Image (cartoon, rainbow over the protein chains, first blue to last red):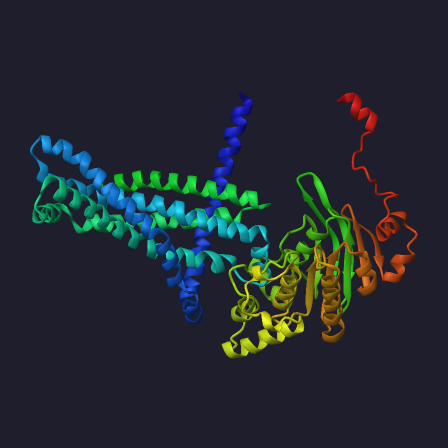
Length: 262
Length: 263
């Protein structure tokens, strides 16, 4: 029993230490980002768009596919009940709220966490074990500016954009199913959406995705930066990144959804 | 003067003492070799000297500044004056040879890209790899990677270069090339070289002074001539590479028979 307490206690302390380190990393990232924007010459060379491009091109196919399928699935489940009640025309309104307020930001966040968060940890972790990060520091280059800032800026541009794209695809999936399966008029579907959707729904989805972008970059980069030892440790760190960023996004989603609409 | 004075450096990891009251002086424009068996604390000492590890006690004085007391930002001016050749080269894997060598120049100077091009060519010529600037690090052999890494270490014309096991894992020709480069950098360009290694022959051939570490302690220091003539059995066993001597082949402290009976 004492062992169990000891184990839980140690894990909790490690968790608090990680949390504090991630907070410091985030502050340093903000500072370095501010410094980068002051230095025009460096900003030009920082190639932030290439990071947006990398994050986008790796994740777009996955986000499009998953979002469209979720759109169809959601419609099937909702329409079954609403059709029985003779309220089929309410389907677009329910779907659009679910997609914008909840599903699209969450799913896109989780997909990108698995895809890019893991890649950040793997890349930075490999650099850590091969002493490349120590080499960067020894050249008097700030590793946060060199490795984290571009990923941070790339992600806070790419993830909201992907979320908007994902929301659209989910609606498209739902639209195709409603029109194709139930023979709903395209106009009816579009009017159904426009009646319900408010600008706040779209904005809240984007705000959520900004939070998730920070979570993905910070956990991904932090786990890479603290890897010690061998290539095996890089593999383990990658797994931890996926688990923690997914979990954090889900918890944060509950908090934010409650805060916005609860 | 770019002199290093290492004074009573002690470093522990957990309960294990890795560096135990290490003191020596590395003189300006000289080649200093720090020799030791694997696990003798050489790498820890080197990392302390570049400011990557803070010791538990002691100081590393460089031009009268104790670099162990400096913060990361405080270390920057010092780090711009030194170069470091890492054991595996530590080239940035996703940058080409050219971009790797240009990196410190782009970061710390306002030089025009055309001038950087010329400078990179000059650095590559020094290590004999002028035609390789477009290649990626993974396309080079281990020895070539180290030479490119040396060119990168030279990028900002440092007055001191640190070498972490520069010849380990290389073929005999690769070893000679690196050793000759160290010697040339020192004799022709007046760069101080601090080399951490276990290659005794190379040290005896090229060093101006040698420090021998064993289990975190300095057991001998002096010129190659003085080291050769040291009567100390430990030092003699190390420089001759003999199996017989005070450094036992068996690492266990318990008697073999006792261990078997307990088992």
